[in-house]
Length: 208
Image 1: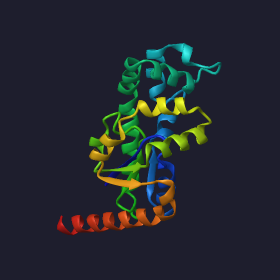
Image 2: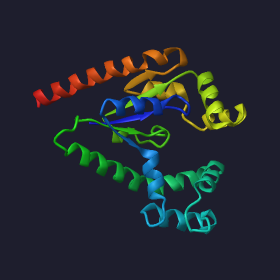
Image 3: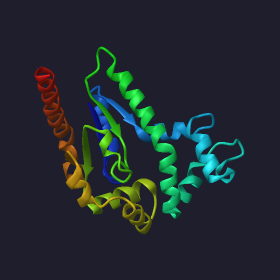
Image 4: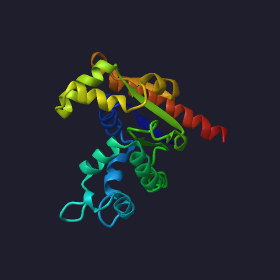
């Protein structure tokens, strides 16, 4: 089973990943794969350089991710082009890593994939379930401002480029509230969801 973990910026996805890791679950972080595939000699490197030019390279001919990010933030057309070029290889790498884990004798039958822009990039069809990590807009802003040391306006601009919270809530299989007030009960909440998921997998196996 492949489960996507997503949520707006500052909702606390990384904390959920830590909880899952601590319980021995396989979690693939898509950002790490994305960065790896942009390195010189990797699959997405020549595609991106050919499309965006050598001005995105540093003196060592490596892609400057901050420069690339500025380009796609300034142009929807360039953002879509980047996604079109890179997503097939990213998802192929995720699938390969997931399949390798599920082939192990001691696997738990589940692979989680942290994908921050899962809905924005229309990737939910790849997953059996999508877990949405959620908190209020005000808490998002506070977390992003404190973490990234940016202004409220900059944080708001980033959030405005993401799919509205209400739309994500409608589309998610599981919603995990992660407000500051609920942080102490978050581990227990995840444990309950995992127990239900394990029971579902066991029923599916026995029925199959």
